[in-house]
Amino acid sequence: MNDDGIIFINRYTGQKEREKVLGAASLRWVYGTTTGKLALHLLIKRAFFSRLLGAMKNTRSSTRSLPDFVQQYNINMEEAARPLEDYTSFNDFFYRNLKPDARPICEGATVALPADGRHSAWQDASQIRNVFVKNQSFDLPALLGSKELAEKYATGAVVLSRLCPVDYHRFHFPAAGVPEAPVRIPGPLASVSPYCLRHNLSWLWTNKRELTILHTEGLGDVLCLAVGATGVGSIFQTYTPGQAVDKGAEHGYFAFGGSTVMTFFEPGRIQLSPDLQENTANGFETFARMGDILGTIC
Image (cartoon, rainbow, N blue to C red; front, side, top):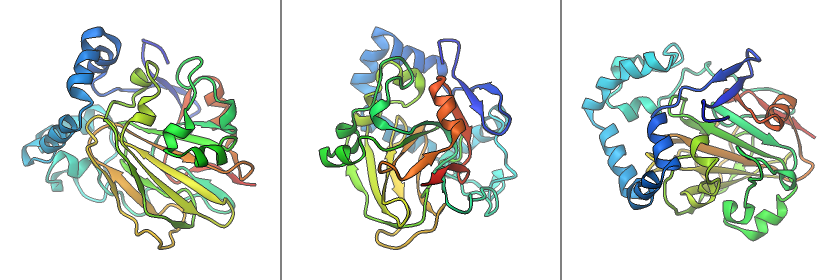
């Protein structure tokens, strides 16, 4: 990724593609200039700004932009559970449900990707050095909101799934198990686009987050972290804490804006898919859909 755009690898074609970034010019200004950064700290990252954007996207009039949005970003309406004219607001479309067979869930001793998006993966969190740019790594205690959890997952596998505004915006459980109630970690709402994270990765652990611990048989405890972003005033959890879920069951959804889901595994529990690891090592995210293979259980 560079100033010419965000390049990722499409798992299904094996080809490099250039991301169509919603509001790219604005992101460059906000996160790459002095005046933009001032606007960010005074206004854009504030919760009320995202609530205002959300309120605008909840109006009936916001549906006027849907046909152009669908066409510009090549959104496949054949997958959607409802036709475009049935949505009552932009947000109603944004966190749309898909048809039951639109996202097959990988079978056997595999773990599923939790969301549609562009994925980065590291087999050993202690070896992470170059997240989006050279020498950036995760602050696990800050990211997870717990020193104890950070120590437990310090050498485990990590997958970062970045959802663009054009993606299907519901996220799912990567494995079967019993989820605890989410732990809510307050914070601002900055963008999580690579345009922004390459300047300051710490938005991931200062932004508003919600952490769910999923107790499983074959993987131990899996940590599922939903990270909010600009325009995402709320993270909606749709599961019932303490009630068993299947692999691929819906976990929750984000309202308007780019978002991120991160998945953490105990050391020695999973072997991540080779293409995710190789592409990440070479500086590229991998586009893949929810339910596809994230890795195999050891």
